[in-house]
Amino acid sequence: MTEASPACKQFRSKADDLSKLVEPTNRTVATWLDGRSFSDAFVICIGAGPWKEKRRQAVQGTALLALNNRDLSEVTEQVDWYPLSWENRAIVVMAAYLQEANRTMDFFCAGLKRVAKRESLMARMQFYEAAGSPNGTKVLALFCRDVLHIPSFPIDRHVKRNLVKLGLPVHEDAMVKLCAAKCFDACEVARAMVISANPDWSKQLC
Image (tube, rainbow, N blue to C red):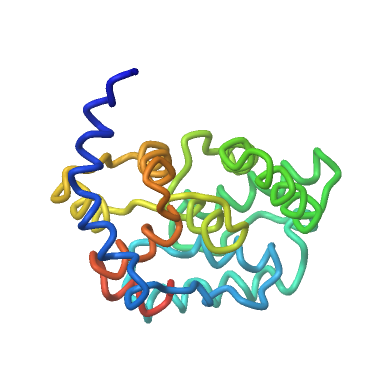
């Protein structure tokens, strides 16, 4: 029998801590993007930058106004919707991908959800590639977690600090795999970690 890796042994030793995070009284359901189109939800997630709640919502609201109920595939103008250049670039890259593939965001995301039923990692990687960030980012992981409902683990500096305290990996892929190995829902653990690590984020994300 193959001996468990050090990472798996470490994860098992901390399983009680994670169990407390996802026990019934602590479980959360993400509702912050309910009723949004895939395009609107993407714009909102990209706007989930390093700001407090009020500023964050103002940034997201400005971007939504600029999108103006369009599908992302219809965005052809210069994008200057956000304060940070990487956020604007994310919109441009995704729009360009959809246009080149001759797909709408709705069609693309519906396809990813079908792929995820067979192979969730493949679906997540396809989304990250299309968004121009093969290794993923916190905001892209948010979209996977709460819109596509694909096992994912957004990690910002607050969550990273908690993972380090627990002696757990600080990389998304590793955390998703370890959650699966212990039959935890990675999305649920990730949301619980946000609540414990950064109460300001939990006002919007859960």
